Image 1 (cartoon, rainbow, N blue to C red):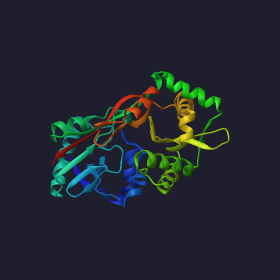
Image 2: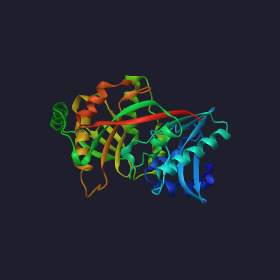
Image 3: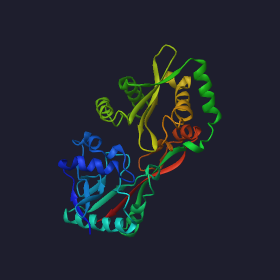
Image 4: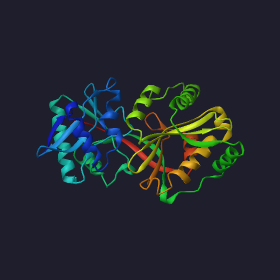
Length: 319
């Protein structure tokens, strides 16, 4: 009933067209995004065909005898068309497992897509993981998400930060200067976690040039115009996702992020004329490692803006 084969670069245009019209695809699965780090991951993406036409795709890479969906992406999973039924998806996973065995793949790590990204209900894969693949939950991260039509009021400490930022004359605006933001981000991660951003500055500039309508930077600046904090936004059909958030020591002391998110949540993205499809504002995960380490300070900040829990789950099974 279904045929599975590996993706090849000559299928890029057809792949991108399918993702754009799928139930749950975002620009992260566009090959112009996925392939920016092709040198870091051995691509093993799968294309599922029915009567010669694509009916599903699985963005993936291979590491040893393990298939990942996908190590270079925040979330992943099977991307399906609007016609896909539960029986279809169960049969697709049976066919995928048979194909993987023929390729000597022995294990699968599957990053399920959080439901907030589904344009239509699309959790048939979760049912198939349990009932076809015998998968088990491997990792669970917690994110903080705001329902834009039912926003919770900011807590007092966030309101206090907004008042301070206004007193000090801070300003918020969209910016095209990724280098200013990346410097703040890099310094912050280095000083606090001895870590570096997942994306280099050149990678962010490349991705923003490819997806100018989806990747946007908003910055807070002091009264002299000096950038003191910002967030890099990934816009998908119904989710506004903060890919990166960072502030300089001056920005932290002056309430820069409080003012910034007040503007984004309660003004910019709540404007139905400007952005009619914004259903969710997602701050991203606040758990580290395998999800067991909750960053309490970080999630306190996000929940202070009204964010509430959405899980980012990984599953695994033996083929």
